[in-house]
Amino acid sequence: MSIASRDGPIVRIEGLTKRFGPIVAVDRVDLEIARGELFALLGGSGCGKTTLLRMLAGFETPDAGRLFIDGQDMTDVPPYRRPVNMMFQSYALFPHMDVAANVGYGLRRDGVKAPEIAARVAEILELVHLQDHARRKPSQLSGGQRQRVALARALVKRPKILLLDEPLAALDRKLREATRFEMVRLQEQLGLTFVMVTHDQEEAMSMATRLAVMNAGRIVQIGTPHAIYEHPVSRFVADFIGIANILALPEGGWMALRPEKITLAAARPDLPQSVSGRIVDLAYEGDRSLYHVATEPHGTMIVSTANTSRAAGGAFSRGQQVWLGWADEAGQRLEA
Image 1 (cartoon, rainbow, N blue to C red):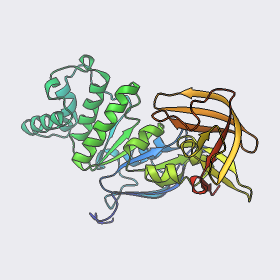
Image 2 (cartoon, rainbow, N blue to C red; image 1 turned 90 degrees about the vertical axis):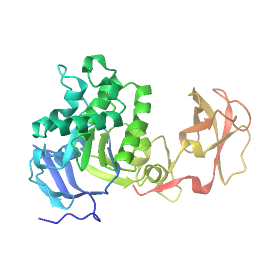
Image 3 (cartoon, one colour; image 1 turned 180 degrees about the horizontal axis):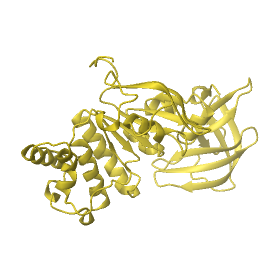
């Protein structure tokens, strides 16, 4: 068994594989997660992200490969002996218990003395701003408050890693946006490692320090949100993260061109690359407008303009003939 090292990654995964009958859910995954990261596993349904998280938790046993947590081989270690805790999408709060009892439940099961339980519960409730709700039942709380109770219950046991399975999925859009910042604040304040599974690219991009994009059981790209958005390595990643125009290159291969990197104008712009087209559809989205422009060489292209400053040539309308232009370095060549 390896000796833990504060210098190494908190998680190291080597060739991890999980099959369900003929289906390979996770396919020879290699991954390292640094201490204190908020790391996101991002992908669509069936990509393997939840299975990978469950193997990290110990709820699924890999068919091949090894998994290390803090330098210790945890491949065959049961969940209750791993230094991790998991927050589930459903929250799974006990309806007959008040907030304090829900949060302290795991500590009671572990045989922690009552005075220490009371102190740790009070400390964590203050951290999640629920100290005034300790005696309320889950039915008396809002969705966001129940989410924070579940988070407090997971954190009160002081795990080395907190695993989060679609943690914001049950919240409405406005509450999700507010809760993102709250969770990032808590993660930074506690200095813990968070590993989060989500299918919501906006959630992953706004919260994670790094993320892994998964497809068909494999990790197809790892990096910071900025690096993955600006430098996708494949057509899949470019199309999955944000909006991208995928253009065929004259010399062969493909290029990803983000909508906001394209200039929309009534007259031909003074840019290295330009093409004419006709607006076939448009959508006003408050801070920006999206235009679908039919072009001869590239088919329909999507262009984004900020509504804080009007695009060159003034407002544009459906059916209007326009020009699109972009710099040579605006596009990202794709490997596949």
